[in-house]
Length: 324
Ligand code: SD4
Image (tube, rainbow, N blue to C red; front, side):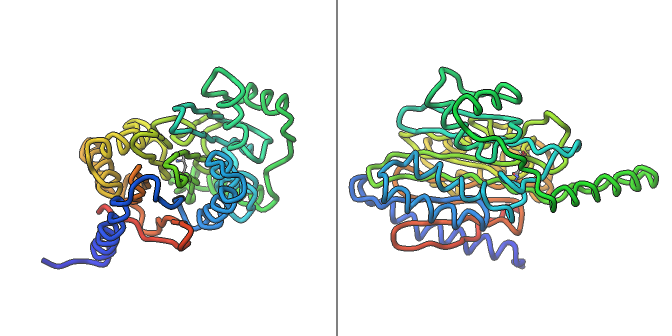
């Protein structure tokens, strides 16, 4: 059997996943903190999470402060400030936050003018009886909570959007389709040394999306899910292909049935691809997961997908299992 580069990369990460599975033998009390996030910009985010955990001893602070790093970084063109706008040139941000211990959660969707939707999502969890606030109501809540509004469309993103508009017009004349640009969400999950698990997710969503369109990221069970008894999972990619399957919930349930994190992420993608009758590579869906035993794993359909893994001993990027 001939093995191509993609399959080989997948085999390597599966082997790595087996290696890290040994961590699962540790008891909860002897576990080390662990933070895992999507994409390479997840690395500074996870490092911040560990630093915050060391300082405040709060896994919730750690998740929030880690994600805020990606939201504040204008070079990350799909999260927070510097995020891509919708088709009307307006940046609408989505985020969610979940605490595995209390099973409480908060989300915001289509939030305009607030650079840190993850913090607003955490406030929804902590200060309201609700889970999800959207649009003008979410912005109103953010204002009342004392968050400062600001223009979050950078001039660079504005230029790109104007070019996209012009390309659209040209393509319409040529009866052609313009492929949407890349899009990357931060999903960051973590566990402290006591086994307390939490997670968050933040995104500007698909670039040039239909105004009002909301993807998987702020939808609990789709872009993120945390169950304090089992583990946590998060997603990045085309939200529509995740949210119709409750992707993150599915992964946590696969782990509940005994799968280790990489196998659970892989099984979710295979389930979705089978039902969709599509090649995984055409789905553009990527996942990560951690379990209560301190194991982590990931699988995705995009070759460029990577995850950041930070423990007190190491901080590095890993290649997920590539599902082809
Ligand atoms: C969405 N899942 O809005 C988000 C976009 C994205 O990596 O992840 N990208 O569909």
